Image 1 (cartoon, rainbow, N blue to C red):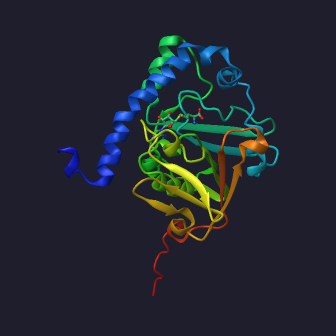
Image 2 (image 1 turned 120 degrees about the horizontal axis):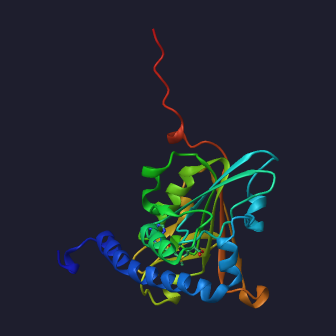
Length: 254
Ligand SMILES: C[S@@+](CC[C@H](N)C(=O)[O-])C[C@H]1O[C@@H](n2cnc3c(N)ncnc32)[C@H](O)[C@@H]1O
């Protein structure tokens, strides 16, 4: 169908499909150059003894001996989350739409990942995983690369256990900053203290879409003060069970 007759969502999806090859090329080069080259980041990611990122620990209630389930959405070829948490049984699941291509590159280069990324799109997570099955549902620098990030956030929230969290870590307004090239079609920002997802066509206050059981906090880094790039961390706690996720009640027998 010609471009001008497609719906906005279909155009978004087509543009996303087209952008994926550039993303794969970037990560192929990155793997070939061992993280361009042998960077600390690369070494962390290929080491099976790497501990879970320190700043993620306080987000998860993890008594000694407990099992902790983490989902990394848009993990790339090698998740940055880490592979172990001393005293706990850490299970990291990593998904990415380019998993097949990434795994081909890893195999070709003889790199054995501590966690193998499997195929998955943020928009279709509920076809793949049961609701409320993760303590932490994480995405870094990836959800704003998706074709429908609001749907992605809703799905991620559904997958978090009660008392669990969704954690999003992204550059502020990446789409605009990258001039909407490639997979950079969306912006994440804070406006009036609220988490906003927007682009040229849409402007979404996330708290209006998520159920009231979502407690959202946003933390924006000011590069002048922190020395870091403009970066936005969003933490979404699931405070109690969402009604649609409650098991169906059977009608009482007469
Ligand atoms: C810049 S990389 C970030 C990888 C990794 N999270 C990191 O921090 O190194 C962006 C990733 O988002 C993935 N991505 C793009 N669209 C996605 C979608 N709809 N659902 C999940 N991941 C997606 C890309 O394939 C790519 O691997």
